[in-house]
Image (cartoon, rainbow, N blue to C red):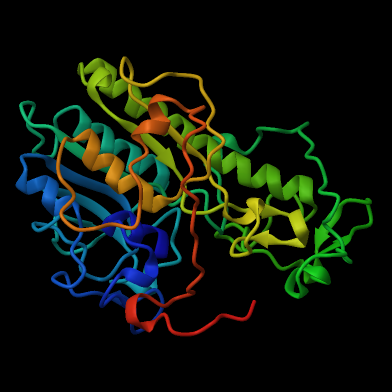
Length: 355
């Protein structure tokens, strides 16, 4: 939730006023006057705004204020449905009553977003647009599409050298951490066989060793790859590709045994580092890699710069345009700040979390 709130405000979580967890998880609320979301500013400046997919930032999803079109799985509003990441989702369209929707969620989100790009759902050809597509995959319980269950049969992954304790010289919370143990086949398996990657049926697909779990995870990535390809094709087919800033990112990393961890939250590359791919043909260089660390708060000022709009309030992020134009820019000196505030926001961030 924190990463999404940052992407909607341009603030780090400790700067987002009024937002808080409330009710049954993932129930959450916020005051739109104290914590405005920037898509509303784009709307006031002539942009059409749309959001498709997972909504995880307050029961109020902002339709009519922040979004012109919205088709979302509103987790905070329906906690009883919040675990259905891949099927049987309660979907809200433009603030109306949620409807139970069948089908593989990743494919559904792609379909709705593609329809929008091609001119559906009220999109006007003569107006610029901002579209935020929020895939729920790949999230535990990792559940690939049926068509991908036979993929990667022979793929093996490298076992991290520090997957087992002790880890001399590391902080206390990491030094003796033991989430993985050596299995009968010599491969790491999860201690106590616990893993949030079980499928919705409650079973592992290929096994509980590291190779099998990563295979299950990466099979789930394939539907996202296909979906992104369809959205880019739709942009090309409709003549919008050359003038569209495309940003592909993730709100977290997932560790596969690095420093002994499984999943997220620890302050290491394996747990916090995610992909960030930016493309805009003719305006940005392609095929380049930037080694500078950046964060989600940096994306919002970058969007405003691309749209040639002034920031509506002072934000915590930095405009990444200089790095996008010159990924090897050695003059870029800005550090990256990440704060782990747990489930707290704004004025509630007054405690130190013991990891």
